[in-house]
Image 1 (cartoon, rainbow, N blue to C red):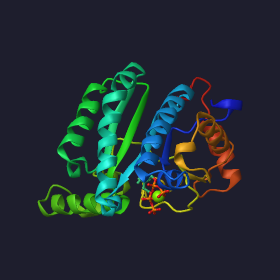
Image 2 (cartoon, rainbow, N blue to C red):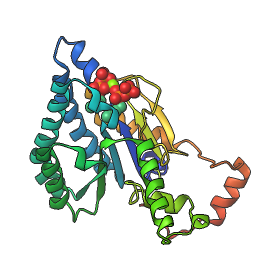
Image 3 (cartoon, protein in one colour):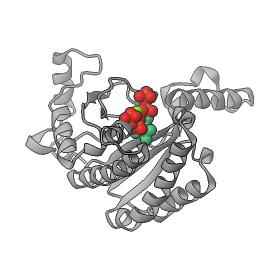
Image 4 (cartoon, protein in one colour):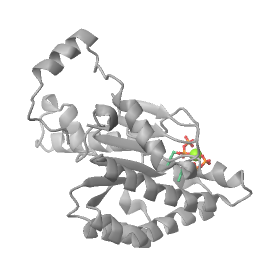
Length: 256
Ligand code: IPE
Ligand code: IPE
Ligand code: MG
């Protein structure tokens, strides 16, 4: 149970937007906004672990972000290396396992190696899975899964009529993650910018006006508390849902 007895979301995903505007409004370079954003990442990870969220996924770099000015892309790639190096000991100590979705192979070698090292170093973490979305695109992930299945079907390894949501998802880079319960976007824009399109089908969406570097531990605690009060009905009526919850009730079932 979360604060005030509400259920904790199992999977929280965050679109960390607003670094550039945070910096510009202070007369700083955009890269300085990203550096400050990395500090907010530490806060978010620490808080999510403390309150017991099992899966935290952060949108760090989208497929579309490759089109940004070269200097900014390089600064982001450097920051990732710094993050991987400076945080590795603490992440492991706190039982956090780092995972990646998207196309890690698209990243510059130095960055890719730093992230691979971070994943290997934290592989035994069993308290929280921290997933970094790197060179990630939701549409691309779906398309590539469809293509892989089509190739398997052509080879006779998969029957087209047996393809379902589960088998499609098993071929996406998010295959090891549960569906998103709460999707937060900072920065004030009310769009999802190609993030976890398939996995957020029934997620609660929360758009915050604050810029990502201003994200604080309390922001996450409040967001989680707010989402815990919402009733997600998955297409059912409130009455059907109450009955279903009653049937599914197990006094020994400890929420994770
Ligand atoms: C961070 O915010 C998102 C990343 C791509 C790392 P932005 O860099 O998009 O900041 P704004 O939206 O321009 O303020
Ligand atoms: C989404 O933010 C991508 C990340 C947070 C990594 P963007 O700033 O790239 O998205 P748009 O351009 O506002 O849609
Ligand atoms: Mg932005």
